[in-house]
Image 1: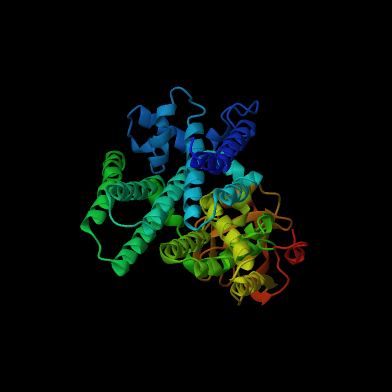
Image 2: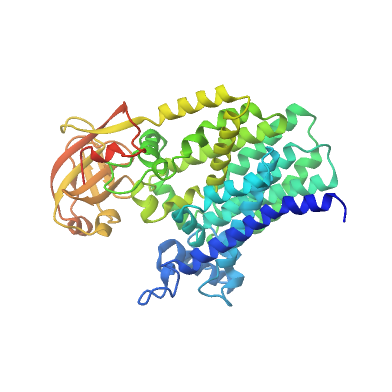
Length: 502
């Protein structure tokens, strides 16, 4: 045995321990999950009775049977295709091994990426574990079948290969294989979750620009990426055409109807990150659940300052990917504090947690090193921004409003939150889910505008779904007033005491 072998074993030990810990945590959460099929008498289907999960399983079963009828394939089929081989032997647990493999792929990809920033495995392993699975709700989103799990694994493998490429030397056969893998993973991300496609596009574009500036680009590099991408994109494209034909699927059409409203990003950022209450009757902001996010955001600038060469580009692209991804999904009309924890919509951000944990660690490294002043200044600036409040103020009919409260009896949550009803105001019609969202509260029902403010008098348009809500007269109209104050996301969370209370 050479002297290097014990050192290699010592370096591998934390990686192996981390992988074993993740597998144990994942399996324990999976087997103990109250919605696991068979865990609750009278609820035998468990999460397969949920909308998303039921559609994943149905698609996987019909893909294995080579049944390509579009009625059985609501979501893009990349995730279901991975589980299709397991549907015969493990019909109720077809996604167990797929999701475990994706979790470990994200873990190994993250460790490789962190190493390019001189973060040793001894630190990178706990960063991943603490940021991704230490919280019970985040761990549950890995155990529950979501296509974001497979996407997270593919994204971190892709980022690891891109970071390796940015710090590589001359073109060699192994680099061509790496570039082909980059193309294949980029296409796979799009096949699993089309909304995540901008991440590989951003990185490949940034890498290409870096190559143009640093040296003369080579056609072989571009060809390898194209061949890898085509190896995945062409068969998936053919499968899409075989299922849906040359037109958008029903899922794509429904997603377009809900869509993203970037004009509402400031308000959505505040209620999702900092201050869901008093606008929403329940739910917690992301910063309240994960206060270390202030270090993560503050760590971006000093991390970019301290990195050099290709590593700096990797830091900048990771930061851009995280910020743009959060901005994209904060702008998604159907992502609200009410569903963030109740329906585990926090799973959208699954791949981002290790990256944010890495930036929090890099802030700590910066404040203990030569970039101390920059790190402190960055933290102060981020903390000040996170002191922003959007306080509800009651307004008259002549003033635009963000929320209107109506008298009501005791409508069910589902009737108010999911009902297919419409409201009308002076500017037009507003459909629930697509343009407004209703929730029961102590006074009756509150309706929150998601696309544009309410203008003038607001009323429910008569329909069966509206009658299920049983709305009475409007009671209060609320607009938002911006101010600075003690952070709503820190104890004792003072914004919970603001009107309107629930």
